[in-house]
Amino acid sequence: MKGALREKIASEITLSDYPGKTIRKWREELEITQHELSKHLALSPSVISDYESGRRKSPGTRTVRKIVDALLELDKTRKSSLYLAESDNLDEIILSMKDFSVGLSPSTFMKKIQGTNLSKTVPLVRNIHGYTVLDSLKAITTLKSSDYWKIYGWSTERALIFTGVKFGRSPMVAVRAHPLKPAMVVYVQPERIDRLAVKLAELENVSLIKTQLSEDEIIAKLEAL
Amino acid sequence: MKGALREKIASEITLSDYPGKTIRKWREELEITQHELSKHLALSPSVISDYESGRRKSPGTRTVRKIVDALLELDKTRKSSLYLAESDNLDEIILSMKDFSVGLSPSTFMKKIQGTNLSKTVPLVRNIHGYTVLDSLKAITTLKSSDYWKIYGWSTERALIFTGVKFGRSPMVAVRAHPLKPAMVVYVQPERIDRLAVKLAELENVSLIKTQLSEDEIIAKLEAL
DNA sequence: AAATCGGTTCGTCTTATGACGAAAGGTTCA
DNA sequence: TGAACCTTTCGTCATAAGACGAACCGATTT
Image (tube, rainbow over all chains, first blue to last red; front, side, top):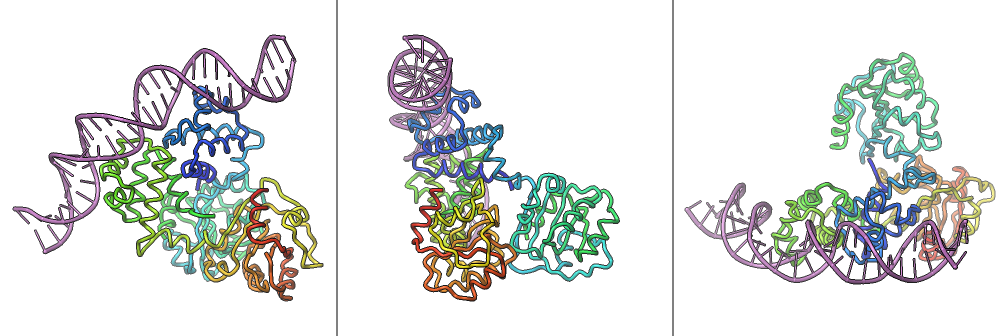
């Protein structure tokens, strides 16, 4: 999950009748001058003008990509960056996310991700209707509480899968603090498991699972579902 | 809102290090032969091969667009059309959708769409951070529950604007049933207003608004925002 | 009135795209 | 062992992309 804005600009330019006009539209939207753009690309300003005016009618993919990336990089340095506003970096927090059309039993889901249950008291009964894989550190440090809902998709009856977990305390604290409760919390390759994390999971009636699969492996397995 | 798949393929080709490989990937995904593609484009098959093999490394936007459209058109004639599978869903249901960079006050938003408040008890306090215009009948009959979250974009603090509303009961029932709640629900030219709809809105603390603007007028006004 | 800034126009150059068609390399299947 | 089909390779050509720089236009600013 990365660069929705990048893709949007790229497709808009590529599919446009007048790619130059679309380039201009975005350059102006991002408040970048032709001069800045050309400087960043190590080109003469006239080149940009030639594209935008339409002297070059069908820029190649290489050119389009260079321009899109330059626009976004220049935008990123701005105070009012659209790129940063776009995500609140959500794209970097959510590594993968899906909703299933039918619920999976928790034991089936656990097998898929080669997980083991960390709690003896929480019964494995809540079906899993989707999952969200997130970078725990980034989620906890940069996600505003008012944006937490975004990780829940259609159904809260889902597995929240945290990567980059050390002891697993913070993710469970966050779950405890938030009104929406997942059916399952999964830690990817945790160093150790904090006892409080397990207690909180039991209090919230949330299944707490760990897996020794790597981040990449688990995402591959889930996206193949 | 049209052609999410088209945009996806276009951006993927444009942003790829090897556009030819991406073209091939999609051609094969859609089960189209080079010969078919070239015939549809009135080109020699070798041209397609040259692109895919990378002899031409940076095809122009015109070329990319022609290829993307040809792929989709050929796919459309297939029994197992990916394009049709896609458009069964979202593209025909969501008529327009946007997220604002700053929130609008509900009264400002109401003025823009010439709306009137249908409830006396729900205070107009939740700011509007975006909107989704959807065909109520299609949304209710064809939207899979696992896709519902897609209409919420980046923020649930938005206006869900339903067109083709008779009495307004079903849309509010759907909102009631769903864990994500919009800040505002707008009915476009409803015939009559069901009393239960108003009750449900009040229960959910959702502002319920009607407007006499036509679908086209309201979309035009919103997209100009 | 001169300087600055953002942008345009255009002549010119090199290189790559966009296209063809002929020949040939692999599979699959009768 | 062919025939049929999908694909690749490559020599060749015209045209457009990709780039430069100089001159120029119009606002603002100094």
